[in-house]
Image (tube, rainbow, N blue to C red; front, side):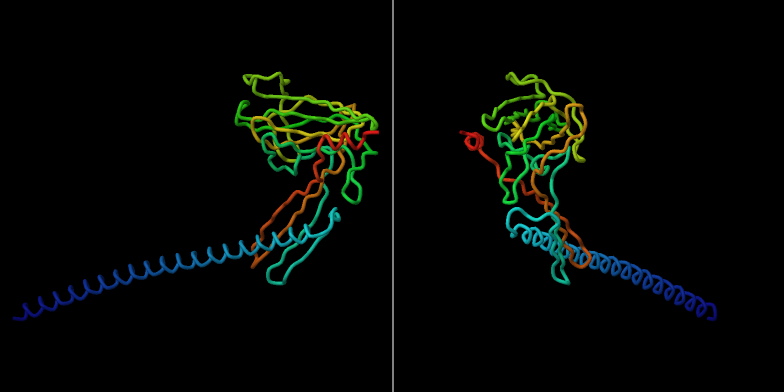
Length: 277
């Protein structure tokens, strides 16, 4: 009788222990699942909040660009703005010039759509001043590593003095030897203002130059230009326009925008007309 009671008590204790272990296991699993759900919720909320802040910061940066673009032409160099306390923005304006310049502000130039390299300064009202022509050597860079025949060929038109009877000279270069044209062969690439290019054209000598127009053919391309004097030393080009750098900030999140504002293009026919007697 005593042994039966002892056995029953042992069985109850064992069952109670098993129930406790099962309950503890269920609690641990539930707690783990709860932590996982809570963690995902927190991450989701944080991501949503960061996305919202990022959008607000981008909108603020765009507001900075808009503020600058509202100013009369030309935009004063060094202009800056600030926004509201909670969502702020600032914008500064810099001049694009030097011996190494990215044409069109570094933006890709569409196939068959030319971009200008100005070889004269501009007046305070934004019009070109043809009394100060540039003389030196121009080297044009373009193309990437995707392959010679997937990259653009380049046509370059240079207009130079004398002012009374300007001269137009054309040059054409193609990295793809299988294309049927009479373009000149290309040279190796280089780095222009932090951007790597795969190809370059032979240096073009310019005497009293007013304007060089570069046109990518067969494909779109980014283009860089380097100016040198007759001895191969760096020679700065005139201003090519302005670049607006804007920063927007919202709840500690910052977004940056950069916009290039070049001088208006002049049709070649109009340019010739400027120098007609």
